[in-house]
Amino acid sequence: MAKDTVLTPKTVTKPKVEKPRLYKVLLHNDDYTPREFVTIVLKVVFRMSEETGYRVMMTAHKFGSAVVVVCTREIAETKVTEAMDLAKEAGMPLLFTAEPEE
Ligand code: TYC
Image (cartoon, rainbow, N blue to C red; front, side, top):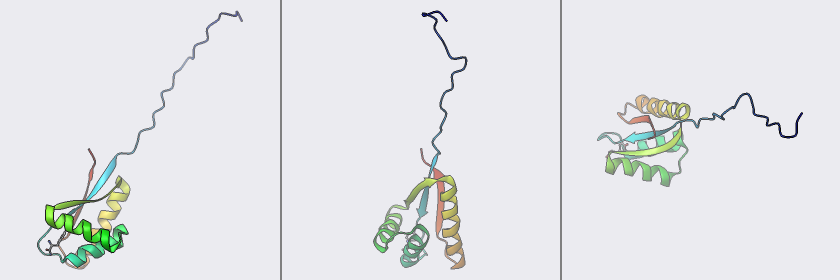
């Protein structure tokens, strides 16, 4: 092979590792569900401490909604289902939703 031969690759592979889109779980205020119940759901389903659960609950209470957690779609949907199941079992109108982050 000549000394000045230039070798070029036949194919160029572009690394294509897409970051999974993140979802936020939202807690929505209502006029009926007791504050204590909301705090318990946040503790049980989202493993929050009493203080954090209370703070997130009060944020939704004051502002209408609060971000509970940002995670993958699968985890967000599982958590929403778990939280909504507890609310339904207790006959509460408590609402959690999941939506993609901008
Ligand atoms: N607003 C409810 C009350 O005063 C408490 C509450 C807080 C309900 C947050 C839902 O996401 C919520 N009893």
